[in-house]
Image (cartoon, rainbow, N blue to C red; front, side, top):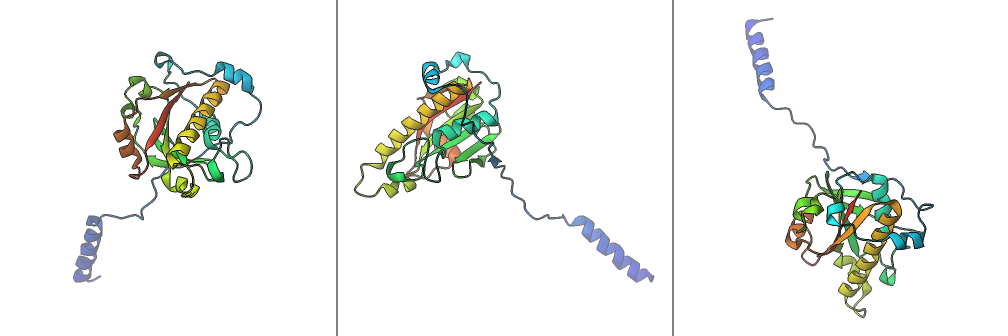
Length: 220
């Protein structure tokens, strides 16, 4: 090989070593397909009603709540229980759920996708410490954030009562189902009134017309 060719080859190799290698971008989203919810056996309805209660802040444990348990609680809150338009809670006019459930856990924040029964990742941040006034909220393994979905609620039509009324009623049914499912599973649940609305809006990137309706903690 002639000296000039060797010099050109060395120059080419040196250039390649200096140029950073760029790999094709990959999705960093960590969606979670939930295991099937428990729909049979377990504690009976009246026994669950007898056990239904709000866990005290002092009794909240940092121990893990399993995905199987979370799956059952989310399904109880707004899951399909008959066909593709039948839910565990009453929906006005047979609409899709017009209250969404976000899950804040130690590994991030997710939106519950009731249609595919999975968690869609919103953030990888642990935001539990900043979404409520009470310090014990950060200790619970999960926080469930109930948020209005005005676009879906608009399907009620101009002649229907205010969408906000339906949203409030639906949230009441959903949170009570969380209480009953938690009681049946031996978990602790608590409705949290002192939400930090602005912080929740920020971490969930909510649309201006939507708002946090309720917050619950779910713990061992």
